Image (cartoon, rainbow, N blue to C red; front, side):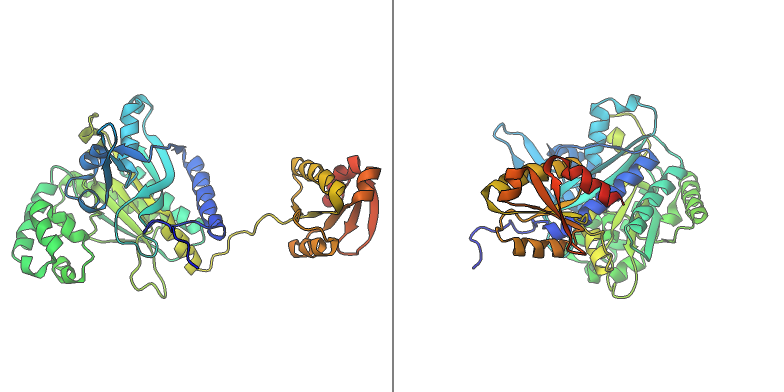
Length: 425
């Protein structure tokens, strides 16, 4: 019988069997963050909606279709955060990080929200992690951010990771490219989907981000951003590619990669898992440079680069690749109890074993010694400690070798130290 109340459409429970994947991703990301000098930041789930309208762009899919926006009782317009970069930049400005030694390296982890059609790996509440480096303009930091995401995916066991990269220019050269693209698209509007016909007027670059099959043939013949780069952007792009080659990273230039956010400048990238069975690979990570965003949000002109990784998508990719996550810590000792007095004293002994950091199993809900020892066998415990009424009264405990079946009586107060000594052997 189905429960009357179920989770909201697009929101999903992360059950215990899946938690180990999320924990593994978090632990791996933290290790990488520590090595590369990134500090953890946590921004609120709820932000002023103007933060995303101004930072992400009025014509983006996120703002037009995907934000969860509502008014508070105090009549404030707020939004559940749909992405991580604008909140990080807001915090950077609000807390005076512009006065810190550059670059300011920050990383985040948490839930985000977008109102879109739920499907595998794409939820309305989804988990994302991100790395942001604010205050450094050279191509080397672009390459390092890409290296970080590549390392992260590889260290999680994912192989055949492909990197797609492009340069979309800056405020100097992008207007010229935008005009060339708009002119090309206007003559082919009848071949575009309804959304893209609107995008031609509002922001033609968004057409290149469209996944509709109808628009693919038009997109394939469109002018390319790399052909319209100014000298500085061209030089920056070339240097990024040279760094990637030096690192031996498997990249390919995708002249139609633009990403779906207005704040990007110059470098943009995405990462996919290729291989058999991947008919339409989805991006596991992506990002780029956003040198104009800090100024757009009220700060000084500031170099910045970063990206995000879809944790839920990576979990699915790890499962599809049959990547095994280390099993739960193996139980070495099992504590069995009999009778009311034995049960009471066993609780104290269990806590002493925990403080001694000895992995211990129990079945306090069972009274039969035979059924408890069956559980101990399932755990693969090396020893069992048996505590019944007699032992409780005599302040003793029985130590049972689960391999040989031999038993001996120990003093209750010395039991933990004796077990620890034997486990070391």
